[in-house]
Image (tube, rainbow, N blue to C red; front, side, top):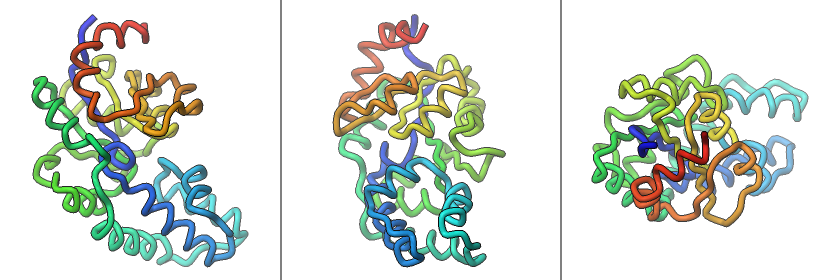
Length: 226
């Protein structure tokens, strides 16, 4: 058993605390359209989904077609809010630097667009650090829960999927990791998350602990997946 050779981080909910902002904007917009929704309900229904995947779900519920500009308008509003409001997940920046200090390469793979991630990373101060490491659903045929994003990130580093560890907070992302044949640490900051745990992810609740978990418990952790 050896510790992982590559770490792949999700973006939203793992590095950037953007989901509360996104949930408020989406819930407000869907309520305006006639689908009454709270931010908590938006989180449950859409966590981890791409905007293209959200559109048919919304149209089916509303029983009408959304305007062609709707998605771009919503993304524009979200980016404006993200640029002013989002903060890093507690411990996320330390985790990135800690993983680098272990000599491990890392990448970011997200169902967000490159434009969205650029705004978020600029806001939290990691735009330069993340440059050259970013993979968006826009780069592959299928976003999460398909494995394409994670496989592309591993291929970019020349690392086998079996030697790759994914850090995720959503069921959608954890399923993508499993489909890619990668181990997954499920970030669950509010305690046990049964749906995330049921994907096979090993849960942890503090991003500050990630480097130590990888270095000190790597062999034990990976043994549990074999």
